[in-house]
Image (cartoon, rainbow, N blue to C red; front, top):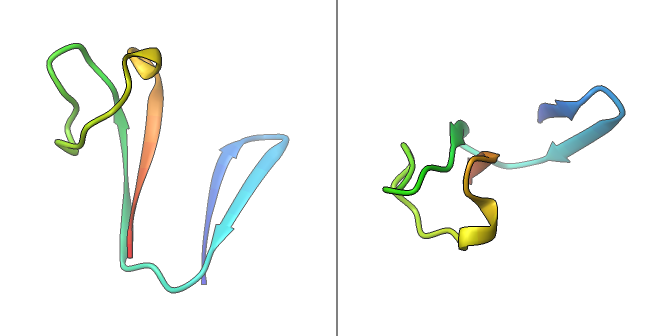
Length: 50
């Protein structure tokens, strides 16, 4: 089981994953190359790989 700490007061636990990426969404796409709504521009995102 893997645990990803997002913020000190928030914890996300996901079982059965192969890995995850932490990226910042930019106007020209992000490092994970996934589609994302404009409302998340300049936000840090976690891409979970199952």
